[in-house]
Length: 84
Image (tube, rainbow, N blue to C red):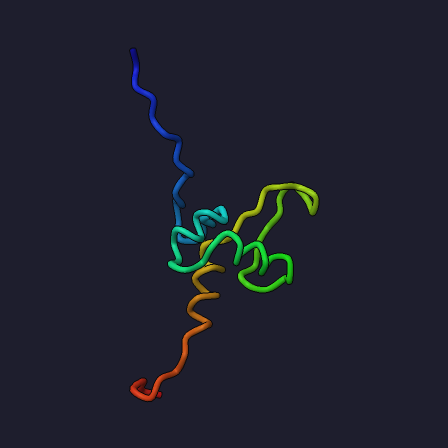
C-alpha cells in the first residue's frame, strides 16, 4: 500500500506571486479573528479586501495574504512609548 500525502497550496515562486488564503487560513493566521467576524466584515464590505472567483452567488472566498497583512498593520494603535 502506498502512502497518501496531503495536497498543499503552491507556494509563490517569486516575490510578486500572490499567496491566496481561505477564510479559515486567515483565522488560523490571526488570533481572535473568527469565521463569523470575517463573514460579517464581507457582508458590510469592510476590510480586508476579498475575492469571489466563482461570482457573487458562489461559495468560494479568497484573500490575498498581502491584503490581510496590510489590514492588520494598518490597525496599529499609537502608544505613548512609540517614537514618532
